[in-house]
Length: 462
Image (cartoon, rainbow, N blue to C red):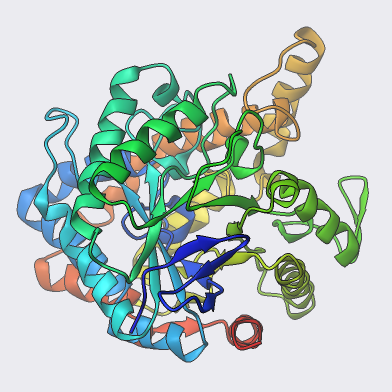
């Protein structure tokens, strides 16, 4: 039986005062889709528009409903429980709960699969954290908040913020009596460039939630993609503060670990130091810490993958030393990063194989290595740096000019150009064929990344 959780000092405690450490995974790519997780290019909104044009209403509804059903089932919840996982972060896209042409009208249909997965996890003793990964207008610049541009308009238009507060009030009203919901993660990786708008938004949203649900814990990502807590004082009550920790030696193409990466020497001590720096706000004030996302990327090479696992091992050791809660990212994908990935001979992977090869050649989407198009992109970067030396795109370094050019050329231009081609792969698919394609996402048909599972199991059972 899961208890309501509450913040007690730096800890979370259950109803009888027993400490609970949340150790889990994030269900990325499910109710908020991401291109590298399932294979489509660009942002989810454009992907869905292209699919709707090709499939028509009936096949479109069936396609995405079966995807949501098979991506996480009872078998997935049982598998996570077998590893000792006790938390599942559930990213959601506001589009499931509200249409842009009917703002402030919450769709009951959006709660169907969310309720289903929360119920499955409850049976296995797994807490769920509801995470608004995509807010109206986009709370950051990137595809993972379903932003089709590179402008976080959420911060420019009060309308978007009001809709988000309204949605959170509806979510809180629905789950206020459910102790299996550990809490509400109000915004994933916000980037408020002014550093003045985020905390007032958090205050307003917390007040709205507390008016209908005074019990649940609230999880707050830091600014600048969950790394910065400037202007966060004073701390809120019954709130857990969240960082994300994507460290350079865990990225695609990173050199040997331990070793030199981006001109800096990385080892377990360096990782721990960087994590403590991100958590300084919480450490100085005696507040609980949650690492809402982390996780290295794998290459399919035994030596490289062993080094990447060591990165994860060292990160988890640093989290544990700080008594932090954590969720690795993501649970399921096509093979880049997740605990579970689709089999290469599955109907889904066979159907999109040639498209993925083209996508890799173009390095479309920013989760892919940039190497194939560097001869095209690098002159643009150098020209900007030479001709406009004072150009400072958002977010600031370490992202910078190179990141911005790659975002615009690969993540938007190339990806938008590929939308119709990807959708066209399913033009003639019948309902039975679509059902079989979606069964590719069932756990029973996927590959388990067993060495990573062993790392998680050891950490969760420590």
